[in-house]
Length: 511
Image 1: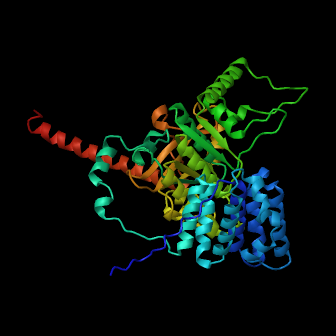
Image 2: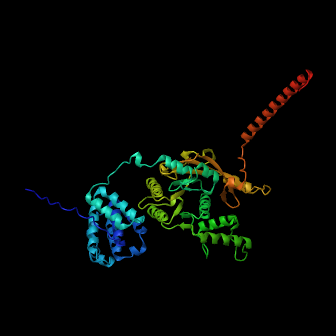
C-alpha cells in the first residue's frame, strides 16, 4: 500500500510595489526600531529631512511623523507595533487606494504590518536598515524588499561561502594586462606622481589626499578634474566647502576656479571694484574667460554636486555615476559628509562614512578622491602616522587604497612673490608623498606651485627647475666648512702632483 504524502508548498515571498509611501513608512519604522532612549528623536528628524518634500507633504506621512514625535517627546520610545496601532485608520486601509492605482492596497498594508513586527526582532534591525540604504542608493525597491522579506520570514541569516583560489582570478593575466596598459587608471595629470603611483589611481579605488588648511587641496582637485575633462572623461565634484558666490549673478566657486584655471587668468586678478571706480577688464581677459567657460560647458563632462551630503545620498550619486560612465568623484572634503543619527565629532560615524565610500567605489567602479584636512609640517612629510587620524578619522588607513599627503611652505611662496627682481618670483614647489599604495614605487615627488595663479603644475612637463630648498644658518655654516676643506685638500693634491712632475722631469722628462 502506497502512502501519499501531502507537502505544503512554501509560501511565496511577499511582493513590494515601488510606492513612495511604503518606502517612507519602512524607513521610519526601521529607524524607530533601531533607536532607543531620548536619542531616538534626532535620527528620525534627520531621516525626515532626507526625504523628498513632495513625499512628506502627504497628509498620511504627516500623521505618521506626528504620532511618532508625540510619543517620543512624552518620554517614551514606542515599539514599532505601538506605532502601527496608533496610526490613523486611513493609513492602514483606505489611504493605500489613493496612493496605489493598481488596487494593491491590501497587499501593501499586510506587508507593512509584517515588516513592523519583524523589525521588532533584534537580529533583523540591521537587515532592514541595510535594505532602506540600498533603496536610497538607487536599487529597485521591489527587488530589494522582496529579498528582504523572504530572508526575514525564513528566519535564516544569509549564508557565507569562502572562494577557492581557482575562483579568485588569474594573477598572471592581471600582471600582463597591467603591463600592456589594459587595466584602467585614473591619471592625476602629473607625470612623476603617476609613475610613482604605478600609472595613477586604479579605477574603482578609494584615495585620500591630506593637506593643511589653505595650501591648495581644492586647487589640486580642480587641476585633476580639468585633466580628465580634456580627455573627455566624466568627473563629478562634490563640494561641501565651496558654494555659490554672492551678487546679482552668482556662479559656483568650483566652476569659477575651473574656468579661471582653464583660461590661464590669475585668481588674484579677480578683485572687487566700486560703482564709482569699477575695475577695467581687458578684452583679452574677457575673451579668455568666455572661451574657457564655453569649452567647459560644451564638453558636459564636469558636474558639481553640493546638495544632500548624507553618506547614503553620496553612495547613490556614485551608483548613478557608474550608470552614466562617470570615472572620478572628488569629495571636497571628508568633513562635510554626514550620516543620519550621528553626533558631531563621533569618530565611529566618521569611520563608517569612510568605509561606505570605499565600498561604493569598489562596487561601482568609480574612483573616489577624498580630500582631508590634516596637521602636517615639513619635518614629518610622508610619514603614515600623519594621516592615521585625519581630523578624527581613527583607523582610516585600513579603508583607503591609496593615501597621499602634500605640503608646501606658504610663507616662503608669499615672501618670494614680493621680490620683483626675481624672474621666477611666482614659482615655488611642494612635496607630494605617497604613504600608502597598492602598486608603483611610492616615495615623494616635487610639484610646482604658481603663486600668481594659485595652482599646482607639473614640473616635468613645464621644464621649470624646482627651486633649491632653503638652508638654515647652521646648514650654511656646515656647507661652507665642507667646501673649505675640499679646497684645502685639492690644493694639497695639486702641490703633490707638482712635486711628482718635477722629479719626473729631472729624470728624463714625461713621455
